Image (tube, rainbow, N blue to C red):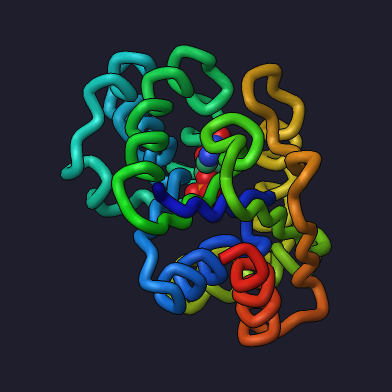
Amino acid sequence: MGFTVAIDGPAAAGKGTISKAVAAHFGFAHLDTGLLYRATGRRMLDGLEAVEAAEALTAEDLERDGLRSAEAARAASQVAAIPEVRKALLDFQRAFARRYGGAVLDGRDIGTVICPEAEVKLFVTASDPVRAQRRFDELIASGVETTFDEVLADLKDRDRRDSARASAPLKPAEDAHLLDTTDLGIEAAVEAAVTVVKQRL
Ligand code: C5P
């Protein structure tokens, strides 16, 4: 039987960092499900129809350049609101969760829709300005020219769309542990997540 850790939350709350560290700590596999939507969005920007793009997604698509850009994030959040796109990506995510002895999946609907039976559910949040500052620092470090206000507006816009959509909206599962990383450094946030997982192992 597999052991699944579901990690959800809004953009730039720390999900990715926490997920990778938890997976490394316990020797679990890790799937960043946002990449599936970003790769689908990218193919839509290339001119493909969104549902067809999601149905035909390949491993190569997940390794393309530019998936981390703000443009790909916006396109991801647009295709993510289409129920048929979500349906096309569902089996792959569930199969991933079952394939390994332990797996960490991070996204928006892992604890609510993809793996409602997950052994551990975490909902990671942080205040808007703190999330925007983290994303702004990342972008500047990678050479992207932008402003704090632009990043903040982008994040808010995406969270609004992700939370308001009818199909698998961003929200904590009823049995999720809430982890607010506003005032936590990376190490403290990872330690808190590892502690929650240990309690269920
Ligand atoms: O996590 P990341 O920022 O890479 O996700 C990009 C977009 O993909 C999100 O804004 C959201 O619209 C969508 N997404 C989703 N469900 C997931 C993961 C991501 O709808 N499980």
